[in-house]
Image (cartoon, rainbow over all chains, first blue to last red; front, top):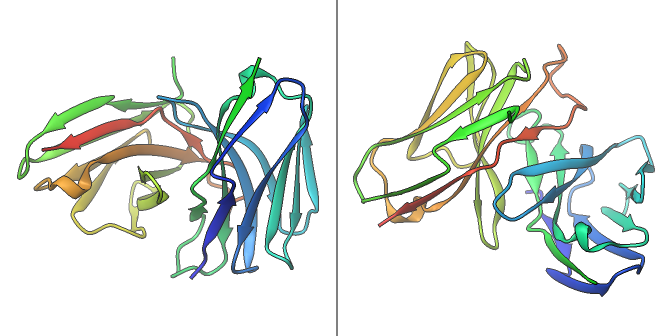
Length: 116
Length: 117
């Protein structure tokens, strides 16, 4: 059974710092991996999607990498800002998981606080 | 207006009551999903629908039922609510691409916070 883990559960950094969030998964048979942002009282916003054949994706100050063979992904945030404070979730689309398709398996998230 | 709208946003009810959570979308997506989020457990898939006539159970469908009334509407029902169904519920949508698996990200509503006493 696929398990997705995010460590640390919470992280606090000063404004301007570059930071890395980690995501690991136990089964490398994934179709893609997505990073989401969740703000309090809000739903999830998709940040980046990396297909299994890709190594990384970039959007603005965000860069996500994928090492499928080792079961790891990282989300790099450059020059962090207080507005980046949120919970960051990673999720994998599993291949042939119980017959389901487009099924996302989520980690429990990292709560990021960027201090002004 | 939000692309994916969930109603109600908050609901408190009693054990044994029947509850319906509604989701509507203006994105024109074929695929819709219901998840629940619990602290320490992340989001888990309850049901998903690839079109009006295609509804499938997810990871934790027991105690829940769904109805896809139209392409834009997907409702989740708790026939007889119990306290361990207290959670944050999310609806999501994604485009259908003709294949089984899509590389299109899912778009989420703002959630319904459900408390069952």
